[in-house]
Amino acid sequence: MTPLLVILMGSKADLAHAQKITEAAKPFGFDMELRIGSAHKTASHVLELLKTYESDPRPKVYITIAGRSNALSGFTDGCVSAPVIACPPTSDAFGGADIYSSLRIPSGIAPALVLEPANAALLAAKMIGISDSAMRERVKAFQSANQKIILNDDQDIQS
Picture 1 (spheres, rainbow, N blue to C red):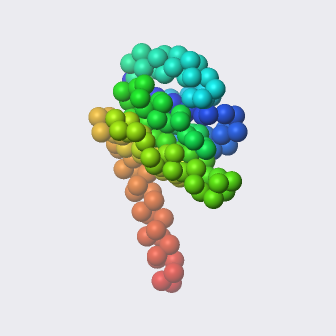
Picture 2: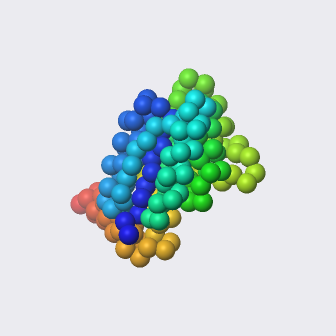
Picture 3: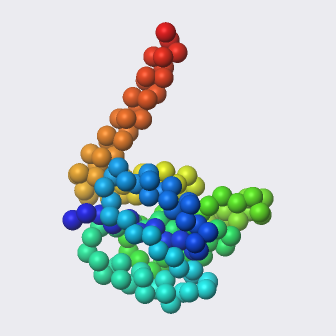
């Protein structure tokens, strides 16, 4: 069964950020779905989406993308049993203070926070890899490729 990566955006303004995640997640072989729903403006829509995904038997991870108050990450985490990764877009509008909404989450709600889109995809793969040996091997291959780049760079500067 192919694992599912659900990328839930707060608005269409988050699409470019979501596309960075999908590009980084492609090598891991996820089925991916991008959806838009706001915890503030369309809570019932988000609940319906989450109910549908939770009834899907595939192993899954949710990545939420929402800025400012980022209620979407906590709301999602409180409604699902699968892991949630908050990957809010960076914003200079509030001097970085909007990140606090992703850091200060109520007790009993535990989305991971990863700011780099590619790293959010990697964490999702590692989460699935706990119980999926094929995914674990893809993560190892990814890590090996990254190691080779560094070793090659080191070799290059030695010559």
